Image 1 (cartoon, helix red, strand yellow):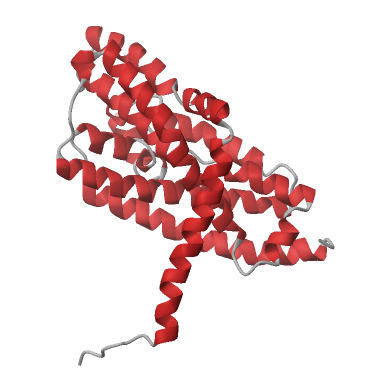
Image 2: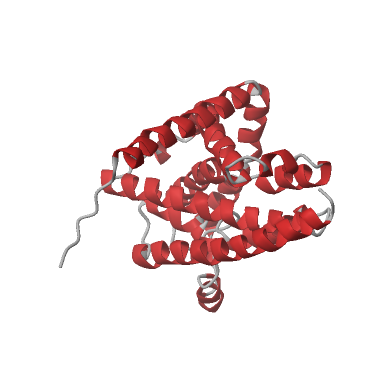
Length: 276
């Protein structure tokens, strides 16, 4: 038996109101981000490590035995650069500062989880960053015109979906680490330690194809390769297990979201106990 659920007029009014509030938050944070155009350029350039590594692996591919060709390496690392531009997260440093300086207390009085402020600022920064990223991508194709390619429409749509999920996972992971700021003044040290594994196991330093098979099998059981290697391979069109990748991202997202909410409730009790 199918039960039809209808919304009353009051509930219908909440939908556009919520959308308007979301757009207002995004526009405010976008205006804030645009004020720092010079910093945005530096932030975009700070994620150019994959472009540097690309030259190293192209030279290695010309004299070594790899499953990827030099052009595959070039396109892969450009895709890594794009993924990094769209999924970079810094919430742990902002949240840590808010807790230490007591700036979190006023936000706790608002009928909105403070996480949404950080989430909106990250989304707005993406829109402000895109023009600079496009310029860098154009410069790349000027230097390496032979590496130019157009992803298929299906791959492009799937890549867009995966990038949204990857950003959500990356944000949730770092925000979970950020909650430890309720107990320690150096919660960012956890992110720095996590970053060591992220750099080497995510595919940013090297594609998973160059890993030994036993190592690759272990790495695929962690969230790291799905943060960079998986979406980058989708964009390039390299062979990838799409179903496993999507299920892994969603699974790890649910795991960290559950841990996040549990730590948040315990952290708030500890924070209020400190007299904040």
